[in-house]
Image 1 (tube, one colour):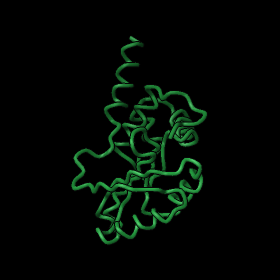
Image 2 (cartoon, one colour; image 1 turned 45 degrees about the vertical axis):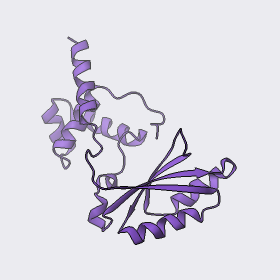
Image 3 (cartoon, rainbow, N blue to C red; image 1 turned 45 degrees about the horizontal axis):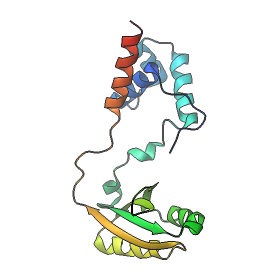
Image 4 (cartoon, rainbow, N blue to C red; image 1 turned 120 degrees about the vertical axis):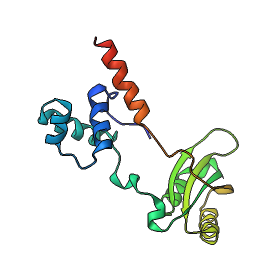
Amino acid sequence: MTIANSRTLDSLDGRIILALDKDPEASALALSRTLGVARNTVHARLARLERSGALRSFSRRLDPAALGYELMAFLSLEISQTRFGSVESGLAAIPEVIEVHATTGDADLMAKVVARGTADLYRITNQILEIDGIQRTSTAISVMELMPPRYDGLISRLSEQESRTSD
């Protein structure tokens, strides 16, 4: 997903995000004190980051296992190119499909799916196969998450690069 109507994040944006990583419940006032900037500046930056889509919904931090979905799988989907709209809306209607990417290679789409177990994954896969335009699926079950999504290194690099260029 691209960030619509936004500019590239700058050093202060990165510092705010890293501070929120350390203390997700920090108020704008607490962040302003920690970072040494005006409270209104922090508030305006957070509002802009949310409006632009740079900060995603709070629910994206949730571990699916906490909801009883302990199995994660990646489905490669081959679709009929003329049915892309029905495929997209059909996948969006299945709550267990938590992420979908258009890809290059043999598959057209890659879907990240959560399930309560293998029988539930079988049910979900069959539900996906019923969507008009899905031609074939191939499933890979995740046996262990080795590295969860992480952005702190990229944000730190941004802050470091900008502080070096301003010296």
